Length: 388
Image 1: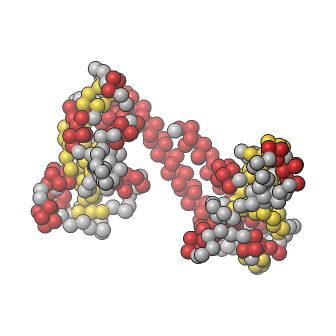
Image 2: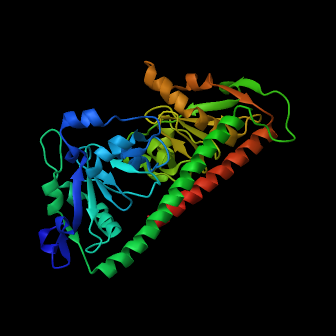
Image 3: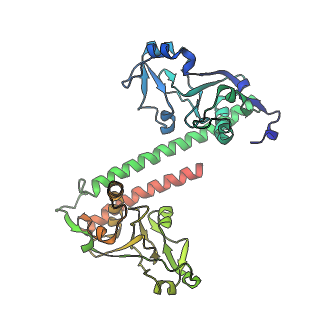
């Protein structure tokens, strides 16, 4: 934000504040230590911290203080519509205090900014500071640990049209932000529900009506055919810009479940002169290097790099069931890679994966239910992207 843009509609933030304070305004370190004890168990007041704002969780994971400490910290009592700013960790980041239905005290390493409502609308100022966070952060200084000071905060210039206009704009922004927060919560909830559903359905803990019988444990290599891909020499132009999609791990991480197109394409000559091979539609693409355990389904005939294993299921294994099963294993596989000496996978290791299989119709039913869960998540993501 350039200084030339600061015209008559801009004000110094210090001129809009009724209060600018912090935890240490309440007394010397020794006095604070004598009078304030932080409590994990619920008590009279919440000591608000950055982590509460970042997680957007104002119902749990609180630190508390008793009534004596709360009253001792009277200079930094926090009320709804106050602004909170990081002083040290990520200095300049601003948060808006919601009404959590409990007394609130300011945590350490934070500033409390109370806007004078006769001069500015708190949510309007908050929105401006969030929108111009890079400008705010440019005031932080320090060689090792950057900090922002009270004087820095007071010197910040804030766009300040007439108060009635601010209030109207703030109402619109608040409605919009509330819609975003609602969709974010719905998305997080749907993702958790899908995770729980996978845990129940892919292990046989939950069965659908009409299905019975024991699941059989199989070696993945005995119920599928696998081949890794290959990369034609990049120095030969005739091998590239052809008609055959060539899948990289970047394509998988960008597109998710289904691969419909790729960033790079190779020619038939490129396939003939490398270890690349054509995978038919519905081949499971499984990352063995880098993003280990990442899975996708080829929605078109394609090739891949050698970092990807193509898995073609046989008649007793439904390809979408395998896709969800590999997604279910992903965190476990990644953890094993981090803890062991072997950080990558190879075809032999994947062939030795053990998988418990119900009947083919039950596999298809499980895959259909999880696909519906995916569609709900995708719809919520689309809503969120539209709102943002």
